[in-house]
Image (tube, rainbow, N blue to C red; front, side, top):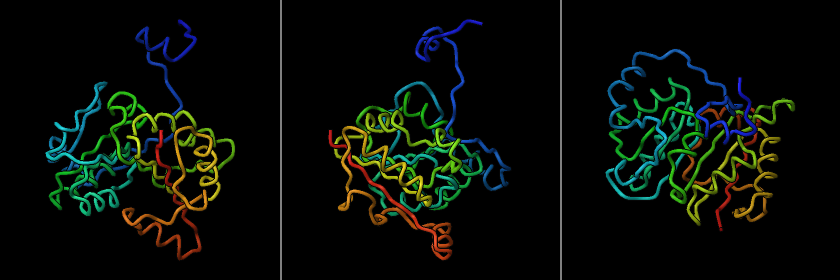
Length: 239
């Protein structure tokens, strides 16, 4: 087997080299409603992965700021945000197929036209499909904390990932993260403080109160009752 010195060299030769993923894809079992929602709504709300930049003017029926969420879970809060902000266009990326089906089902019930979903690895979507400087906000809520120390390298918030986010954000756009693991919050803060071109919007240079646009989930409410904390970080791209 040929050996390549870098990922770029392998790609140039047309060879796919498997990379460590920041997620574990869990297919789960689709309910009838989720499967039906995908069948009935994918053509209008789904985006197939392709190595081609998206045209947001063609994708949405209205012009407006673009908000992209990485890993929307079952999509409850993403759907609520899209419903609460009808003049903003939302894109959600998720690899959990039942979550995709649930999100499409809820969005269809509300008749939303400002929400699109992609079922694919977020890093590949950013690399191939998102135009530079096009996003007003990138959302990353409650990603897998990979809490064991030996797994910390799998955490999605790493310098290369943040550099990619910066490239896709417009000047003045923000990267909003939230986690209920204090150690991960500290890790996020450390990575972001070292990243060039970002400014922390926190008055205390650490965390912010939950912005009004981020709905509080049942998961959060349950955690708060058990005494668990939630940490929000919002960093603005300034250069």
